[in-house]
Length: 129
Image (cartoon, rainbow, N blue to C red; front, side, top):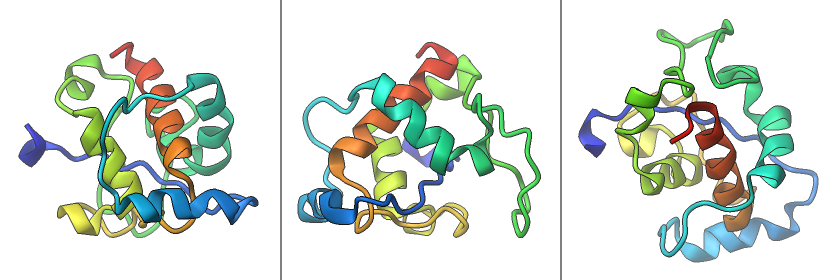
C-alpha cells in the first residue's frame, strides 16, 4: 500500500541533461512498463544513488541531515510493498511531494523517463522483487 511506503531513491543530475525533458514532459505520470534495463540502471545507481542508499541498497551509510536512513532495498518483504509506480514517482517528484523526506530531491527536470525506469529495474535486483 502506497500510504505505508517510505523509500528514498536519490538521483543527481547526469552530465547529459538533454534527455531530461522526457520525464518532465511526461509530468511524472508513470504508465506502461515501469522496469527498464537493469544493466543501464547499475551505473546510474552507483554514480547517483549509492551515496545515500549504498552500493547494494542496504543503506549502510551515514547521511547528514537525515533523521532516519533510507530503508533497506535488499529486503524482499519491504520491497514487495512498493509498487514500481511509487518508485517512479519518488524519483521523478522527490520525497517531499509524496509526504516523505525532503532530502530526496525531485529529478523530473534532470534525468530522463528511461533513466528512471532503468533505475527501478536495477533497484529491484537488490531484493529479487
